[in-house]
Structures are given as structure tokens and as C-alpha cells.
Length: 141
Image 1 (cartoon, rainbow, N blue to C red):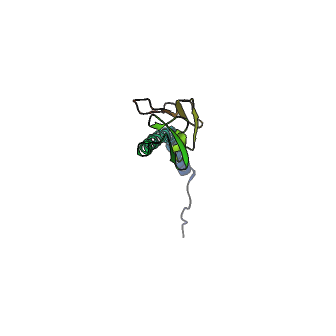
Image 2: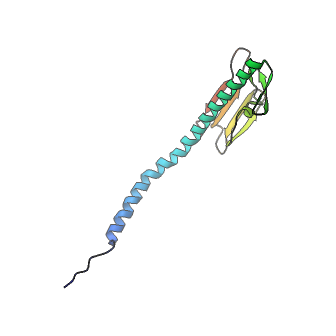
Image 3: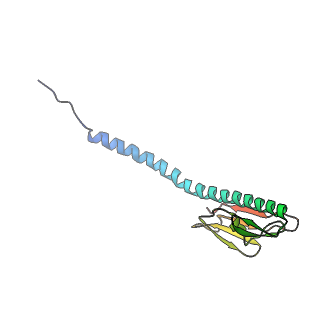
């Protein structure tokens, strides 16, 4: 007499696998959800570094040329106290996608699109004896 081998999975085995996958998902989803906030924070910190570098490059051009308006990537950048002014600092950046830019005359604010007012980079123009202040705020990212 020939016996047939069982093929496939039993209902119990399937239920156990589904339960294990559910438990793993319950632990994994919160970990991945918090990565979104960390990513927005990292992008904001990255933009802060880009603004610093761009201001330093414009400052170097100002020192080299002695002009109050320098040209970077085809854009005219107005210089105040040796550094870019708040109105034209955004033009020094190659890309600020994902941020809205506003300025009030002496301060430019790069606000991360889709976040609160506490996910931003602020650029305050240089004073007569001080370099520009560049502050990244990530508490609302």
C-alpha cells in the first residue's frame, strides 16, 4: 500500500505565521514612522550647512573683488557688511526645494514645507562687526 505525502500548510501553521508577522509589524511600524521626523530634521540641518557655505563663498567673492554686489551662478547677490543680505541669500543656493523662503529686510526664513514654524533655518544679516547668524530650528519637524 502506498501512502500519500501531505502537501501544503495546515490551518494552524498559517495562523501562527500570520500572528508572528502581526507582532513584528506592531514593533516595526512605530520605528519607521519616527524616521520621517528625523529625515525632515536632517534636511533642515543640511540646508543650514548649505546657507553657511553659500554665505562664506559670497563673503570670499566680496573680499576678492571688493564689490557690493557679487555674481554667483548668474545671480546678483547684494552684500551687506561683507556677507549676502537677507533678500538675496536664497539666490546663493543651488537648490532649496521643499522650503518656502521669506525675508523681513534683515532676516530670511527658510520654512520646511508642510511643517510648523519650528522646522526652519533663519539667516540674520551680518552686523558691522559680526558675521551673519544662521540658526536651524528642528523642534517642529
